[in-house]
Image (cartoon, rainbow, N blue to C red; front, side, top):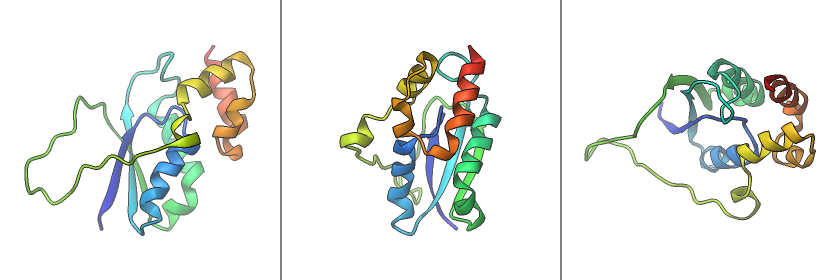
Length: 137
């Protein structure tokens, strides 16, 4: 079985991320989300395990269907390939409201007690995300 691979920090998972993977899922492709194992800091408030748990909750139906796979990978410096390796490296162009969604802005708004960030994140993750970010400060 082949997968479309997405490598990221997912700090936090938001509607832009979901839109991105939906581009492949809607084509009938499976998706593999690789979580970069980065140390926690102000830009990465969640451990890779916390990210894995959050993504699993958000995407449980697709995981159970076998359409999405999630794993933690070592942090990467680059993605490299030789010719004729049997896969493509693609950029999926985003625009409009999706392009303006920012995990950095979501974290910033939560820290400042604002609520606009809730429009960028699936509501089932609101309270847990808010608690995790506020408890990091």
